[in-house]
Length: 377
Image (cartoon, rainbow, N blue to C red; front, side, top):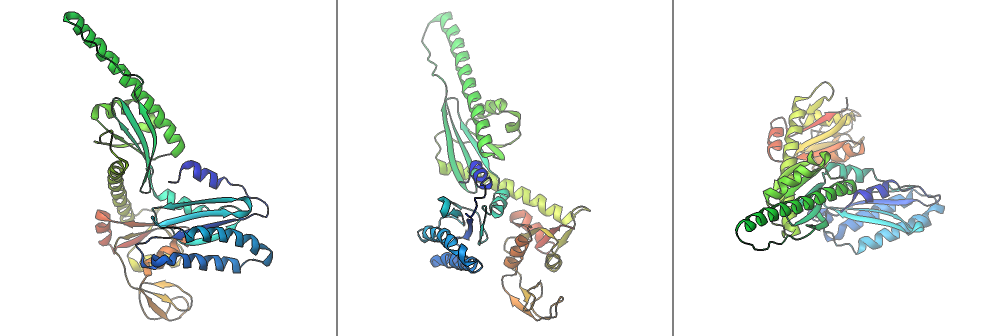
């Protein structure tokens, strides 16, 4: 899992004279036929070879050392995620890599500092969740991010409370004292949990907080949270304190999917309505035209939408039509099967954003052509 401290360390890495950093983003998603039989290694080889060919002879030895280290690691990689990110500087003995359960676009850069823009873009698209699983005696604190879960704290109530048997009025008074002491220790315990959550949000910066466990414990904990944490509580979950990580992750992802579907519905509705400050294009033809003008800020399309299209054999412009002549240079248009993929790539090249929507949002978008874009102007 990529932590806030990871990101800060990579982003804050200073340039070292005559020591450049190789940044690699690799698509390793095994659900894609193009990546099966370790063909992602061939993609890496092509990217590194292309980079090396652009370098002057004096720099090639340094680049080759970085590239060799990256290749060695990838040669033993057993993909379990969708994307792989790596930063390497062999001369400084610097090597950082992570697999992430989010798609990345394959690219490589060799420059003075790590090329972090694609990583930050991926991280920006996903929300980080905090999970507090509590009862009156224990607490377990987690973060969930891009389909991964990590446990950070396991806290216990400060001291056990014992109940000694008495008789008559003494028994009644003892029971009341016991009850008050028990409530006090629960309060201290949950207050400590609230303090730990403040430390956790400082370290990981999670966007939403899920409270899990018995209603009495989660309700009291919510009251003890700081103002900034109370505003991030998204839902309360019914889970036993001894739930395993897989059960907690599945419950958190269920909430995350519901939140994401609602966000997508609102995004599509805003796209369709449009406004003076954020004009939009709806339908394939208008969206492709806006892309050609480099006006697309956010491309939005429905899951399962795979239209035919064309590309100019001369200038490379994309079209919603599959034949004829190019509107820009007069060249011939050739049919392509991966129009959406090429549109996505060009939007990202133009520093735009891409959203694929599902569920009710996809159904609503299908009513206006299954694709659209929020425009820069």
